Length: 497
Image (tube, rainbow, N blue to C red; front, side, top):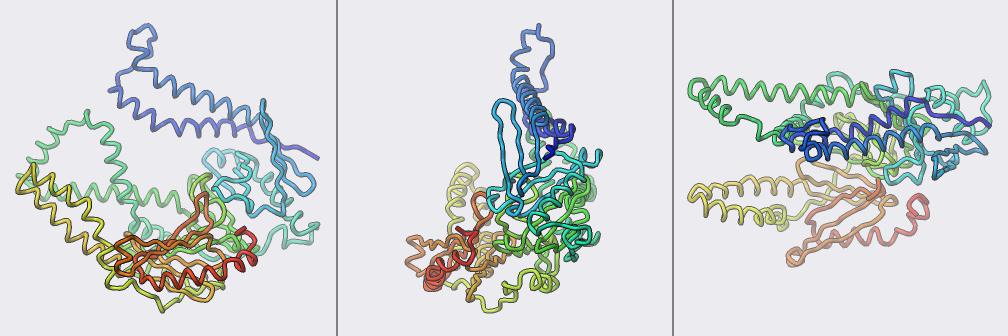
């Protein structure tokens, strides 16, 4: 039995993670202090201006020392069909993970990993439902990572010989690969531009007192007076810059996005500077979502997401996984049917939200517009009354949501369609539903209207879909459909227990 250590660079990676988490608080502290700080401890303002930075420095040093101690004490080895992990100086922690219980080994290669030919390995099991892996090996050689996978295959499938190539290099087939054209189209039609704009506004707000707004206003007034074309050109240039940044971020995140089916698993790889690989057992997929944002829907384009009973690309975050970042809905049918034959993706007979439910999609919005109108009218009469014009897009938006709201029940499948901004179609098998809840307010009851909330296992809190403002009899029928077969579904799928 040989025990293995992490690569020394893992200590530096842990320190950099700590430093990264302190960047934003540090910038905010610098702005809050008005960029007035001194490193001379003899200055009377030293403690007042530097106290917060000293706290951040202590936190950074503490986490750095913790990372070094973890590297010094971390050991992993293979014994009795298990991956065993041990670390800790004062409090020793041990974790034994049966190889045949491991669902996937996920790889992540950051900038430092790639410089030294290393990889981070996270171990997912059936118990990894809170977004956290069972074990994480911060930095090891790729050969060592392959050895873990080899030991896992040997424990799962028996003794591996040199002639047994199927287990050493299992057969795989490519399901999807994003082209450069699709990558640019994804960035163009995503919400990335809005994220960039709001990010810039958030940064600007932190330094508001140092920005010469009067000078900017005077210059803009001058430009508007003498050349409206220049103002329009500046706005277009700003939008172009935001679009280019959005494309760059999308390129970094989704570069070389590839989906491969391998050994009853989906293996997804992506990333340019930071390359990530995640393996998802097909039997861990709890639900499938097709998301069509308003820019993509007219062209029949959508993104496809999986709700998985396990972790995603990021530790401790949502287990929602993007299967196809951008794909034609028609082109997605064939791979869907091959990967998930139990689902029916060409559902036609949807039950729409009734016409009498239409006001429920926008009437609550008037609760915030009424007091806003009253306040602005009181202080800025009569111009404050212009706020009432917001009622027009609010009602139109509510009708748009009502038009999308629908539900469909098959023998073993439930499909829910809803819209906030994007149109979301949620497919789930009956035996994957963790909970089904009927919701009905006093006003809904008067109109025989009710909503339905469905929850599946995904991450720490689960994933939900809501069928808004449907006919009450339809909701009660769905509750009855689920109630009578819940016990049988759990018996067929032990992972739900």
